Each structure stands twice: as C-alpha cells, then as structure tokens.
Image (cartoon, rainbow, N blue to C red; front, side):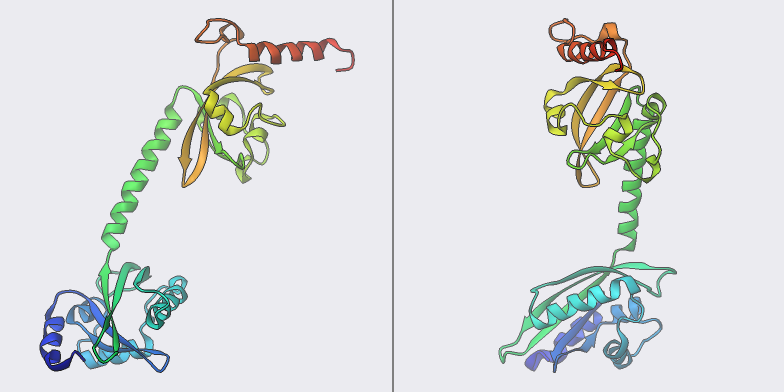
Length: 278
C-alpha cells in the first residue's frame, strides 16, 4: 500500500486509537482496503476480525446509517472519491454499538497520492454525540432564558420578519393587550396581528426612527412604539415594543412637545368621525 514501509505504516495505523479507514476508488467503486482496531470497536457491531470488517464495509457499509442521511453521505463520498470535492467532511446519524438509539458521527477524509499516481483516501470517524447534545442543551437553555425574559418583560413585545413582515413572536403582555386574531396559530403578518392594512413605515425605517406612534384599532387609540433590530433563527427581524401610555403622555422625549405624528393621526381620525356616513 505505502511502498517498502507498508507493514510498519499499517502497524501504526492498526494500533492508533482513532477510528479510521483507508479506501481506494477502483473501477467506479469505493473499495475499503484497511480499517483500524478503533473503527471495529466503535462501529463494528461485534466484528473483531479485520478482514471481516473490510468485507462488511465493501458490501454494506451504510447499513446502520440513518435513512434520512444515507443518500447525502453516499453522494458526498462519491464526490470525494472521484475528486469533485477535495475534502470529505460530513456529519450524520448512525447506530453505534456504544449506545442505544442514534449517534452523531463526524467523518473527515483527505487523499494521499503515491509517487506512481495511485491515490488513496484516508477517512477519520469521530463520535460527536456528547458534544452535539451539550451544544443542544446549551442552545435550549439560552432560548428558554430568552423566552422567559420576553414573557416577563413589562412591555408588550412583537417580533417580525423585516422583509416579509411574518410575525415570529408575541409575548404574553402583547397577547393580552392586543388579542391574537383568527388564524394566529397558523401564522399571520404583523399588520394582521395589529389589525391594520399597512405599517406607517417600513421595518428598516421604524428601526432607524427608534420611536414612533401608530393607531391600534383594537384600542381605538394612537400608541407609542419603539423598534430595534435583531436576528431570529438566522432571519433579520424587527422588535416592536408597545408602550401602553395614555394620550396625554404621547410627547416627544427630546422636545417635550406633543408628537406631531400623533397629532396627524389623531386629527385624521377626528376629521373622519365628523364626516357624515364615515
């Protein structure tokens, strides 16, 4: 395999405490030519003979891989073997004898080119189940703490997609102050939730302004809103905080003068109310 020092090299690979296998692409087929002791221990399902393990890998190496992941890693392995991708780097679920249920395996491989032009693939396998479970637990803790903080926040909060306006979240105070509309459970826009046809500004303009007023039909009054930017599961989002103040408190904090936007909206409302039939 590796020239004159092949036996010495394989002896080292055999004894190394890392699950690894060596493959060669022959006649449009991936052929297993070596497996380490650690690979048999972690992934052999009782197989202790190297030749038997190699035979198993050549005939049915994906037997214990999760069906949802099988086609994906087969394609990745073929792309790696044929040279379409330079590195084999996949994470997938597989049943391992070290635990019940599904384990998470990270496989990473590279090519080793010989002087005569022969190329071999050396692939290392790592059981990363514990690390993934720890990451998931930490993420769940962060999310739970985040949602608990939002739920207990004194102001009504709504979070929506800055582009599509899809409503991602409304805390309990918001749901009490503005009851969710029909179909809320199936997804609504921020406009549908607030009962308006269109927002007074785009989401980005709201965020730039920081603070503005807007009519809330449910309360039949103009309310103060504050807006800021955030990210919601990888999507750009806007956080709306609704202040439940009385009309007399709708003033500009910088000038201490009545909000001109409030006066405009409130004036339009009064004018419509004064026109017969409106």
